[in-house]
Length: 461
Image (tube, rainbow, N blue to C red; front, side, top):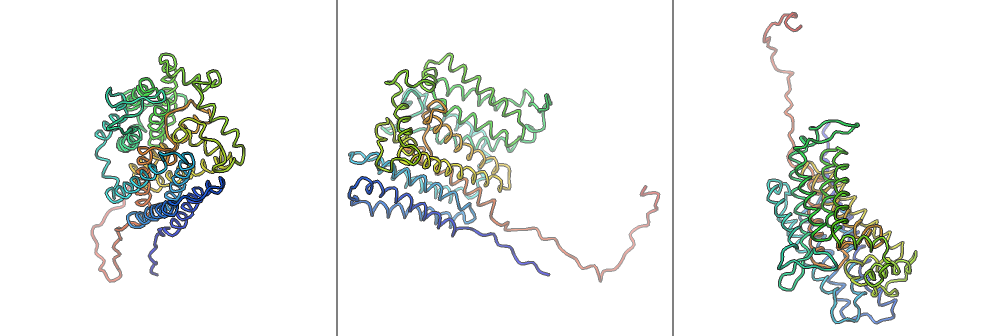
């Protein structure tokens, strides 16, 4: 009996339906602000909504053309988060001459164009595996670039920015992609050695001293970021990302134990010997001790408390009282106007995005793709946990942005590039194998029987 050819569904119709749903929620949030405030819709509203629809559908068509077997849920999640961020930025800056929402919309357009370029140019992500050490050096250079004396810029107590021609840029956002590529390439080549070599002690296989080089390098780099840039969030992000990828590659809990212990030691040393870190920890533990210095954290706490369970409604709260609410504290603005329920929905969107990224890792057919998708998913998860933990005072406040929602071109561009890579990995993992090795079946019914040799039974014993 002949077997029918199995066709893998592309699920692009599902993605289109979810994309239109995400567009409708983003556009509805944009218009709801004017309804709640009894304001007339701006004359530019039809143009803005039309352009946003073009971007949403355009991103979908890019995937339909260049990665037809990619995960159908990743893009709608990102578009919904991005659309809500644009709507909130428009609400926060209503009536001001300078509109960050227009600038963010421009950044979104550029990011989606770059997203399409990556989908077209990086058809086979495995071609990047050969540049392990080049990518590692580029990533470290980007990560430490804010320490340069001319272009490095300090803001909010952290030195994580560079300024060129009057424009600020956060190189750590691009560094997380480059270093994840380098980590995935290195670990895919050395995973068997890191996994098998070592001695067992207390039921755990511990690595050899000679194999601790990469984790020692990342520990020193993270400590440098923590000490000289006064940025706990970036340090935690990169070191935690590397340790998580080590655990995925080796399946050895000893790497996670050593990584956690190393970061705790680095944090304690920074707290004891770096004055800025001590100030950040004190602001975290007792912000009301110095109202002037911790005004941002205090206002964010009051906003979340005022929002309650269901929120005040978009446009009805007063999130503009929070300093830097456009970037660092945009999640506090959502918490005030959408309430605890709205915050849970946003967190679930991020969780779904990370889960589908890890699903792409499971579907990958090579270890480089598995580690790359896992690392990028962990990077998004760690960044969300770090910034939301700082806003809610679960962790010390950091200078990281809320992915796809906060104002900032560098963060938005980097996260859209992460989405493109995850979609490519998902596409290659779900796509049918083009060339299969079909075994040759020979009919032996009509063949002659030939006696090759007579073998004594004793010879087979």
